[in-house]
Length: 230
Image (cartoon, rainbow, N blue to C red):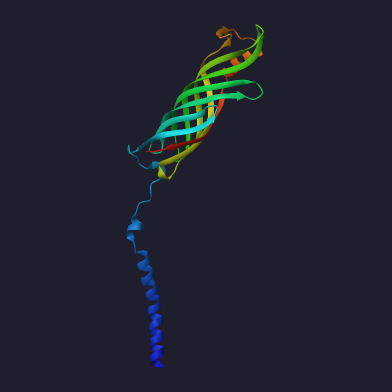
């Protein structure tokens, strides 16, 4: 019995020492992990050009339609690039008219928090063509007549949005803004009939509305833009 009590006493005394030793061993098991610097943000990672990451993008939106571009970003803070957009012939519901739009722009952006959110401004040039068709009876035959309207504008476009950096060098983003015309040309009008294209002086409410619309600010939204950051 005395030996049993002595063994229990030794176990009770060694128990706390064993626990302390186990805790100290676990705390110092991998000192390299404790001293390792925090992982850099994915938005500040270097690419093939060092601190500058660049790549192509493709997306779609309104009124731009399909949009193809390229961008370059420095240290996840400053970015710039350009884009070309094309809206194929699209019918305006209830009017019988179609519209085609082509535009190109350059942009500059700042990511104030070194993350996805950005503020930017773009400058560009856009051309728009509208067409309305009708059938008239001439020379005892039905003749198809097309009336065309042309307008162009140089614009600035403040905008804001997000561009997320994803694994495998992919980017996904969207933005919204407004195109503000600073110089406009047109609209001019012509008519295609009897195999001839004849310039015309358009008058009336439709022509006046077209002129006003070509000089108005236009809301812009790029619903989706996918890129690849090298």
